[in-house]
Image (cartoon, rainbow, N blue to C red; front, side):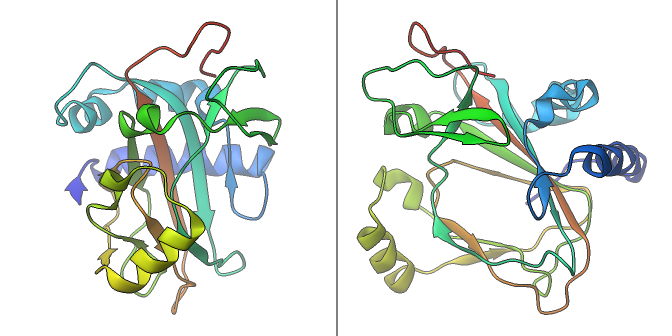
Length: 212
């Protein structure tokens, strides 16, 4: 976990996030297609975020998807162990190695080859403190190196491998790979937990497919 934002930056983002969530809340606890909001696209390219992304060796990356997760006492859900397997694209275009397809909040999503997911990064910026009592993310270190996993493989790994609880302070950030196994529990003492989830890629998609 890393320090990312000072109090003024966090409060500014909270104001923007609450305004967006109030207008276009999607599902029980969040907003997809966050990069369509100019302020969040600007934030994804800001010095503070670029410092986090560029700390990981590799090619220059660019933001391709943003989600606002907004967990509240009324929306206090559990997320089972999983990998993030889908990317958001502009439109459906049948492409070898890409599929299945889905539509989430009006945005086309598809599962790409594992090699693409292995090259991507996710940055999660916490706008509220998330201690161990507030349903923080749990991860299994090293699991992102195993490629795309079946449900049976995930069941074995989550049972036999040690996991780590990622308690993050307000303004803190964590960086992960999409294929890292992660989960979260229902909060024991639920309070507001807003997280800006940003995904970055370093390569263009095959001809006919474009990032959102």
